[in-house]
Image 1: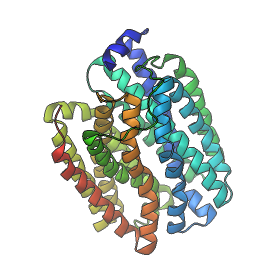
Image 2 (image 1 turned 90 degrees about the vertical axis):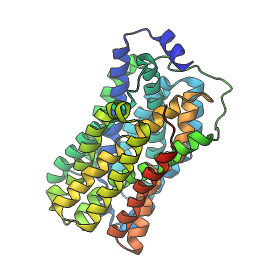
Image 3 (image 1 turned 90 degrees about the horizontal axis):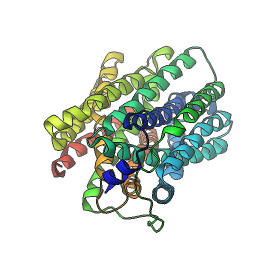
Length: 387
C-alpha cells in the first residue's frame, strides 16, 4: 500500500526526492553534532560536575520522549513533508538558544525545546525516507543514516576547530544555525509530497505489537550506546584518556567516521548475510569497543574502541526504522513513533544515566555498564525474523 501511494504521487524523478531527503538527514545531523561537540565546553562554563551534567541532559528526553506520540500523529495527519520542514527549522533555531544559556535553568529550558525539535525532525524525515524506499523498491535506509553520520563527523570536526581556536559556543552555534537554515530553504521544494496516505482519524499513540516492540528494544539498547558516544566521548577523552585539548574530540570523530562508513555498506551487508546476523555482529562490536576503551584507556586504544562502537551501531537503527516503516498494521509515521518511543528513549536517557553512575562510581565503570547494552543487542537479535 505504501509503495503504491508513493509511486502515484511521484511528480519528480526519484533521485530528486532521494537527494532532498538525504539533505534533511544531513541538516539534522549537523544540528545535533554541533551541540554534542560543545557539551564539554558548556559543562566547564557552567561549572557542572559529571552528576550535574547528567541531570541537566535529562531535559532533552523530557522534551523529546513526551512529544513522540504527538509527532507520530501529526505526521500521519498532515504528512511528513510539512513536519520535516518545521522540525529541522526549530532544531536549527534551538542552537542559538543553547549558546545563549548562561545559567542552568536557561540551559534546561533550551534543552527541552531542543529535544522536542529533535524528535519532530527525527520521525518526519525517517518517514520521508521510508517513502523514498518505496520508490526504489529496496532498502536504502542505511545510506540515509550514513549521511546523518557524515554530518555528525563534519560537525565534530568543526567543533574541534572551534575548540582549538577558543571560539565560544554562541558564535559557533549561530554560524551552524545559518548554514542549516540555508540548506533547508534549498531542499524544501524537493521533498516527497505524499509519502504515505494521510489519516484524519489516526490515533495519537498506538502500542507497538510484539514484532515492533522487539524492534524498539533493539533500538533502545543500541541507541543507548550511541547516545553515550555523542554526549560523553569528549568528556571521557578529557578526563579518563587525558587527551590534549586539541585532541579531546578525537574519540567522537573516530566514532562518527566508522558509523558513517558502516552505514554506507550496511544495506549490502544485510542483503548478503541477512538481518539477524548483521544485528548480532553489530551488538558484539558495540560491546567489544566499549570494553576495549575501558580496559585500556590510552589515546590509541580508546580511539580504536570508539571506532568499533561506531561500526557496531551503524546498522541497527536503519534496520529497525526501515522494518517499522514497512508495518502492515499502522501508518508509517505512527509505527515509527511507536518504535521510537521505546528506542529513542535509550539515545536520550543513556547520557544522563552515565552522569549519575559516573558521579557515584567513575566514568570507566559507567562505560563498562553500557557495554552490556551491546551484548543485549546480540542476544535479542536471535529472535528477529528475516524478511
